[in-house]
Length: 410
Image (tube, rainbow, N blue to C red):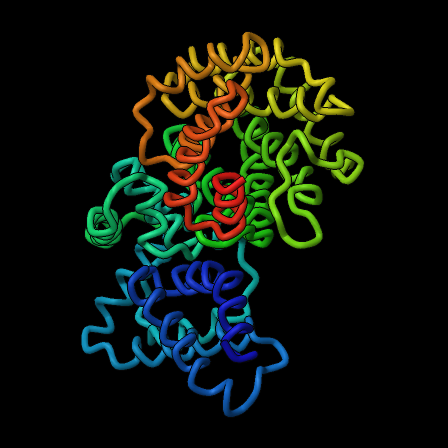
């Protein structure tokens, strides 16, 4: 790739979600916003190699997308109807002003958090849960449909249909583009938290990129804002703590060559103690509330890990007890897989392998990787190598794939 193409790819990853959210706020039209942003990137691909990279690439993309959207609105034959629809979506009074002029006048006005508003719009209860999460990952995180489908273990065609239906539902039902009033927040909360956590995970250990710090930071920022909106909601606090404690390990996750470093081998002196102290403080506040939920329990598990100066000092019995609590709240196969890791440390790899082998997660690369580790610890080297190879075949993350292939060949 050329320098301009590399820069454009980086700008798309970091700015496309923000640009779409800004245009949805102005236009109340998700499809038009997406099309305008995509066209802006196409124009950048054509012009940047000839004219050079602009001083502020992100601002260039946003301005170009805005101009494109304004042109489309001006050409709209039923412009009064479009303006009334936009006004209804934004909760305005629906005056007779020219819609393109109205858009232009709003370009530099200070606004609230466009992305958080878009998250709440996409997580409206009129949409199915998986559609809410998939649509928001597409719009906010800028993930490709194939990557979202992989995260949900469904086909790309199935996920594309869900996203298309969700956008159509928002348009036809005139779902407002706003953070809902306080009495409506609780019914949206579970989907919003799920979306933010998935965005964070994509940033921490991406589907196709080794890591996306920009996405993780953005998910954490949006979660802080959500916690500010709902200070008495313990699960919002729990998710924030979980993100902070997980993010604290980022500096130690890779060596200088970009190779994966497992938790057991990480240099804990490189962990971010500021994030650890903040995250542990939030966990303690959650415990005082006495209203445990899945994000709070996961944050408590991360807090126990962060307490150990060395891997050997980890209180695995406490972690296993917390996983028992988490499984009682959220009895999923993935939770049971993670619990098996703690079970192996407390009761040995054979007990853990018996649990792992009974889980229906053959399409999940971490199931194969966990199984491989347990087989290796039990002395079944040939079977372990095969399981590592199977795990490598199921991940698109280049750093993970290189690590797993290395283990398969060792």
